[in-house]
Length: 453
Image 1: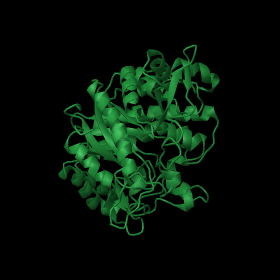
Image 2: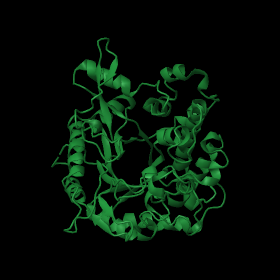
Image 3: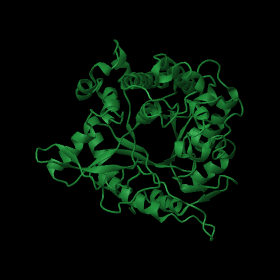
Image 4: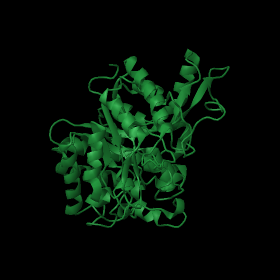
């Protein structure tokens, strides 16, 4: 078998996107609760108030996970459910919900991989400055300490923060995501610095508070650069472009990953951003550079890059050719070799095994007249992408796991319920779950440990 014996097959979801029960049992508003109720923010005015009602239906959902055969479930905790104001008194009913969920997962033979922060910041903390406030470092550390103390006897795998470019780039710079700000680049870099420090403080708290050995990471994302050919020139051009750090859109992978792995920001970025770079105080970089145990990465799409006449990276504008396939979201351009090149480039640079914490395809899935959900495009997408992952395994690239995004159709942020990523179809009116064809296809991949790819 190509895949390592300890390779983990999983699926993923996030609290705000599936839980619902937005104002139940002591949960307070997050920034997404506020944002979704602002007119014009979300497709057709959708909100996460009910979502997939996972808060009440989690036993059924865990049953579907067990039937799927996944070994691990990547999920997130709603910070405002367990500490409604972000700091201070915990919420016993919120904590009890995750007790039940973790116990249910473990009883089903499924290992929880817990993301502490998947974008749903308690609104009370946003009103105190959110990530622009340096106090966020300690707020997040205290939250992580509570999670470690409460669940560290059962949860051994953590991701601190999901997709920093979305937290800061889409939330604070572009205004597309909550809280919906459009701040100057310097303010965004300050928030990014605090986010990375908060990650470091959370790593310390998790290691101090959990029982026994744990594994910790942070879920990065970017857009993959795929060599136009496998010539050395094109490969080096793609690698150089992948880790370049001059863009001002906060999607520079190295700006987020290098400080954690190397203890310093990329020189190229420091030079490009100049006076906009925030003050870096004594001890900041040491805190950020806490040891992590594996690379966690969310991989969806990318574009081809070739070396120009001078060897510099050049984006090929036609993508994968005329009529190139896409998901129902325009940014999801199907890029079959994405997993392979992301794994190769990142493990070479950072020297740790990689787990793909998200990868998936959005489509216009619906229940057909025969009562089933036929989604051949998703199966084709998975076959192509996982074929690239198999190539990485064949070449001995260190791989830790793969989590399909997502286990359920769910609330897709500013796109509402329009786009469906799930292996399981959700009728949002009746809350009926219907496993899709891709669910059964992926179940066979898991059963055979990828040997059928």
